[in-house]
Length: 178
Image 1 (tube, helix red, strand yellow):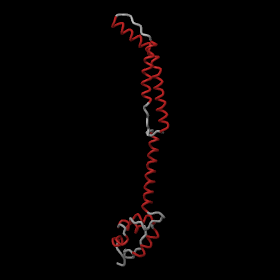
Image 2 (image 1 turned 30 degrees about the horizontal axis):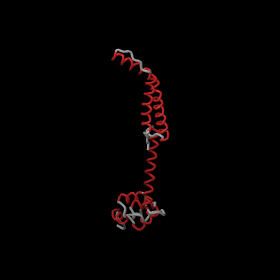
Image 3 (image 1 turned 180 degrees about the vertical axis):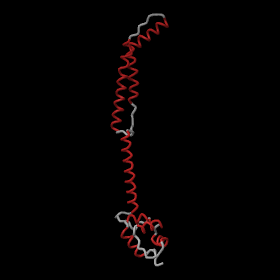
Image 4 (image 1 turned 60 degrees about the horizontal axis):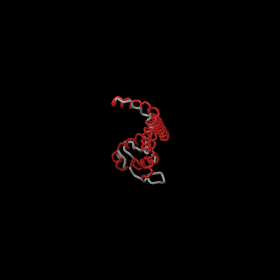
C-alpha cells in the first residue's frame, strides 16, 4: 500500500471518516492505483477545492476563516440573522392569519369602543328616569296604599350624578397594549 487508508487519512486531516469518503467521491482526494490516499497531494487538492469557511466548520477550528473578523462573531451574526429571518416570517404568518394586529389600530378601536360605551351611559338616565319614576311610584303605592308622585326630573338628576361619578372612576383606567 503506497498511501494512507481512509481511517489513517481521517486521523491525519482531523476530518471524520464520512467526510473523507464524501471527499473521495467528489474527487477532492488524490488516490493511488491500489486505492490508498496520497496524503500530501490530497491536502493540497482539498485546500484548493474546498471553501475555507466549510473547512473551518468541518474541523471546528478558526484558522481557516476567510473573513476579517473572528469566527465566533461571524457565527453569532449568522445565527442572529437566521433567528431574525425566522421571527420575521412567523410575524408575517401571524399577520396573514389575523392573530397579530397593528397596535395603533387596536388602540384606536379600544378608544372608540370606550367612547361609545361612555356615550351610552351618559344618555341612559334621560331614557330611563321617567320609567323608573313610574315603577318606583307604583311600588310605593302598592306598599302604602297611598298615591305617590315621584318627579322624573329629580330622579334623572340623581341618576346622572351617580352615573357620572362611576364614569369618572372608570376614566382612571388605562389600557396598556404593550
